[in-house]
Image 1 (cartoon, helix red, strand yellow):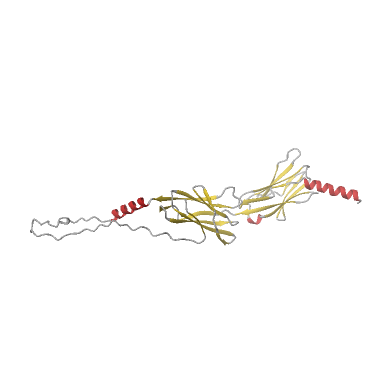
Image 2 (spheres, rainbow, N blue to C red):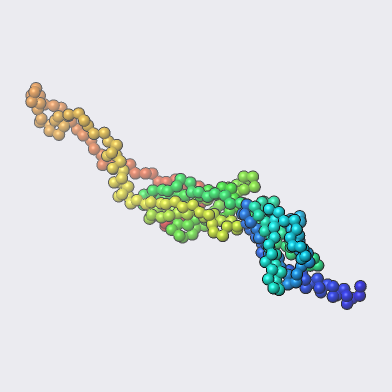
Length: 284
């Protein structure tokens, strides 16, 4: 093979390779969902192959179309004039599908994309809604269970975002994460914990409500509860308020009776400082 022929051969390979774009180059999907990759050329490919982590899953021939299609791996033709495009569809994606997805046209260099398979867990705020006296300190704890990769956890209070120092532990190949938010009760607020991984277009969230009572409202509430819990006297006690009352039957003065009603009500002690790993803010 002379120099001219070799140069022409290399040029043809380079041109063919440059005309085989693969999209997307990076894909993140949830386990059990579908992953899609598109490979196209400007000339009809005589042979196009798709491999996942080195194993052949789809072969496409110009003459006969798709070979060896399965329920899990299939291909769809989206060819238009001047754009010969095939889409690989991976259904019910599993964790062992993560890695390299390769499209190659006969005579061209392989085009490689990366597939990340992720797990969506659960998110919840421990303890639910809270009612606190104005000025009191309180905490909310968010727990995200069963995620992969390690999720990003943050807080939102009345739509204002707050970062979070997350502590995570692994359980098998999944992550369980916790984050605590410390706040001063100032006004009624809705509190959200937001959990995000790349495969989710929007975060998963859990929402609770903080109801803030003024000190005066708290005092009235406690007084009402104490009043409801107090057992009224049913006996007929005579002379309770009149020291000079005499029983008309025996003429003797009854003993003096005293009642002791206290207006003091026990207020709650200060709330504990809580976890060391937390986000603190002074205004809700």
